[in-house]
Each structure stands twice: as C-alpha cells, then as structure tokens.
Image 1 (cartoon, rainbow, N blue to C red):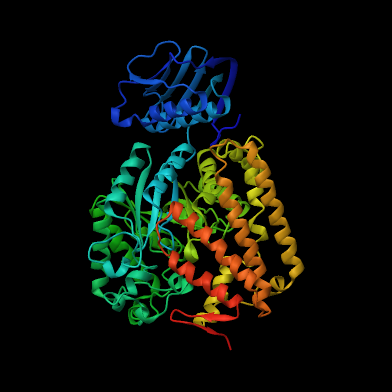
Image 2: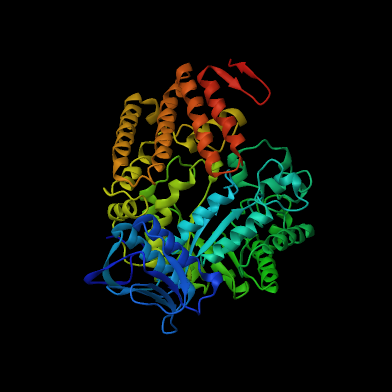
Length: 618
C-alpha cells in the first residue's frame, strides 16, 4: 500500500475494518456545517471504491462508524488516523488537519476497497505553507470547471496554497484594450474559485504582475507611454519579446497610481491576507525612459523603491506582500528596507539548482518560500526527471535555510503548449517533498504516483511518461526560434544550435522509433488502469504523435525540402490538439499557436505564410 505524501509515522496492526451499509460518517458537533466537505469526500470515495452509500450525521459515533473530530492536543494541520476493528477515527487540532486525514483514508480505501487494514497514522507537515503556482497568462486561461478539478487534486495531496499568474487575463474594468483579444477570467469566476478553495482548506492567493512582464498593458495605445522602452505598441507580437521587455517606467508619477488601482480592484475578490506583486525580470529597468533616474540613483535603488511603495501599500490594506526574488538576490541586503511582513519568493528551476540564492536571502534575514518548478514550460511533455531533481533540491534548501514554505511553479512560456494534466507528476513531487522530508527515489515515486493517481496496478505509467521528452529533438522553443528568426527577423535566438542533430535523419529515426515503442507500451498498459482513468492515455498519445511530426519537420526544413504529406499530417494533428486544448481551456492565445503551426505547414509546401496572404517563396 502506498500513501502520498508519505505519513510521518504509520503502525500496521493486526485485524481489519470491514465497511458495511449500516455505518455512518459522523462529524463532530464542533465542526461547522460549512466545513463538512471532508465528510462528503469520504462518502464519495466509499461509494466509488466500496459500492456503499453512507449517511453523514453529526454527533457521537457508535461502533462501526467513521468519526471526524477536533481535539486541542494536536497542532495546526496535524492529524491522527486510527483504523480499528470497531471503527475509524480522524482527529486533528483544526479542520485542515481533518481534511488531510480524510485524504489519507481515501488513498487507503482506493487500494483496499471495503476491507481496510487496522493501523494508526500520526502525521504533520514539514512546511506549513505548501503552494502551487499556475500560469494563466502566457497562452492558456483554464475554464473554471478545470480550475476546480486542479483544486481537488491539490487538496488530495495536501497542498494548501494556490496562485494563478495574471498579467492581463483578468477582466479589469476600464482596461478593455488590454484584454479584448483574450478570454479573461471574470470577477464571478475568481470569487467562486476562492470559495471552492476555502472549503478545501486551500488559500487562493492573488498574484498580479506589477512591474515587469506587462506586455499587453504596455503595448496598448492607452498605456504604451508608461513603458520603459518607447514604441512598444508598434512591435509585432513575439513570444520572445513579451518575455524580455515591457517593464513599467517608474520615473513617471502615473506608474505607481496605475498599478495600485489594478491591485485594489483585484485584491477585493480574494479572502486571502496575502498578495503577490511578482516584480520579477525587470530586464529593461533604467534602459529607456527611466535611464536618467537610474544613472542618478542606481538601478537597484529605483527597483527597491518601487517595490517598497507597493509592499507598504499592501500592508496598509492588511495584506502580506509577496514578490519574486530574482532581482533582489543581487543585492539581498535591500530586503531589510521592505516591510517586515514581506515574503520573498526565491526561485530556481535547474535540475542542479544552486543553493546560493536561498542562502543569501536567509542570511539577509528574509522571510522566504523556496520555489521549484514542474519543468513543463516550452515543452510538449513535462521533463519529469528534471522536475524531480529540481524540486527535491529546492525543498532541501528550504529545510536547510528555514524557509516558511514551498511554492511549486507551473509556467506557460511561449504559448503554454503543455497540457495542464501533464504537470500532475511534478505537482505531486512538490506536494510529497514539502509535506515529508523523506526523499523517495525517482523511479520509486513514479511507481507510487502511477498506483495512487493513475490507478495503474502495474505502477509503470509515470516512468513511461518520463521517457518521452528526451526524444523531442525539434522542440517547441526551437520551433519558435526558427519562426521568429525567419518571420520577424529576430536576432537573439541561435537557430544553428542543435541543427546538426536535426540534420541527421538516423538520429531522428531512433528518437521516433523510441516514441512509437513508448506509445505502444502506454496502450498495452491501459488494461492495468482503472477504467475511470484510461481516458488520460489519449492526451499522451496525441503529444507523442505531435513530437514525431516536429522531429520529422526538422531535417525537412533545414534542407529546404517540400513535404506535402507531412504538412497535411501536421494540420490534421493540430485539429485534434485544438480539441484537447478546448477540453480544459478557454481560447486564450490559441490563435497565436495556430498562426505558427500553419506557417510551418505552408513552409513544408514551399510557401511563405503572412497575415494577409500566402505567396510562393523565392
């Protein structure tokens, strides 16, 4: 039997508890009716995996019941789960702990059915703050029903904070020029999601770009004069350009009031007492309209003064400020100028990530979260081993340097092509190692995730998925680099990097043959999965097919050949990909992806596609 996150202490005892239709789920009278979601989760679990429909009541349990109770002797989020022959008891000092005991019980029921082993589990988290951060800006805006399913997953694995990355994809009042080409989240959706999270003891924390990464705001005619670099509104859309530029001009007195106006409108939707202003990657700061101010005071000074103003504004509004730590890590002592409540989000995403930034911020006295990632950005398939290595390292640094918590990130750079479900293993790595500091080897935790999350009796599926990304040779970042170099005269990409590998058709054949084998193994393994989970296989097979097509495109394009059959395969595949996208997401930036995919299809036919016409290439 596997349990994730792994409990701190578990003692298996003799005997078993047998569920039957006469038992009840009894909720302690001290637990409010508004906090009864854990009881409903147990009820649904037993109905699905044991075939019994049990009543939920309040009061005192009788022999054979499942009892959820609050006991002051337990700390925050701590719980004890006891399965005895005469009943089941979950005790905790707070309702969040009751929820975590319930989630552990559900994993046991899923693996054991109606006959449960007698045991006692005593459990508590290594970090009180365990978060997940999801990009909702750079391509995808998930539908509300999909966001709720993600929240259910977070609750299942005892994650208790959730942030959505927003630049422009909230329907701000008076900013229609900014979001008119998008399908933004609405106030009603955010409020409903906040309630849904709160019922599952998850804090939905607002996160809003407030300094750098303001592409859509500062590309509008209305606000382009507040951009650090002039003429931002005149530039054609570029994935690289939106990542590297569009920092607000802090030397303009209007900048601070504009950002405060956005923060005020957005924070009103959330019950959280925290607010993430982001303030990361301000690459252009002091290089344009604020250059004279930067020359006079220094780039780091004008950076920290603006961040300080925003943090003080949040504190005045009873919010705890959070911000990304990449800029301040160069001058860590500046953290002392920010309000004492401020939390630095110290991030690093490499498999061999150094501990230097976490150490420097700790030595400077910063309250910090350590922030790893699920390694899905710019990828058709998440790089699971890289994610595992990064997350285990960052969690160890968090423990070593006394961080407040972990925030595991899921970004969507270059159009957010990675399907949200493909981040689930990385999400669980973060949940497992921020709750328990006992590390589990890569292949072993993949086996456990296969059993627990994918209901795969063989335990193979996640290790099969881990083999996919290494066979992606003409990857999405390379595809964007080639497109923007050829179509937009972008000079900052090195399109020759990796060209030798793409030109070798034997290497391409080996990679694609491996992908065919993995696809076949996934199909063969489907019989080992519960029928309710087999639908997940189709998205992996679709992405494998897409990777094969892109791999084949590489040498064709490098050698400037035509291939009408490959172009048709690409277009047919993309039709299915759009259906997969729309199954979870609003339209978002799908139109930008379509433009690039069709550009490649036309290139394969010896044509050059433009936004106005298609003409033969020279």
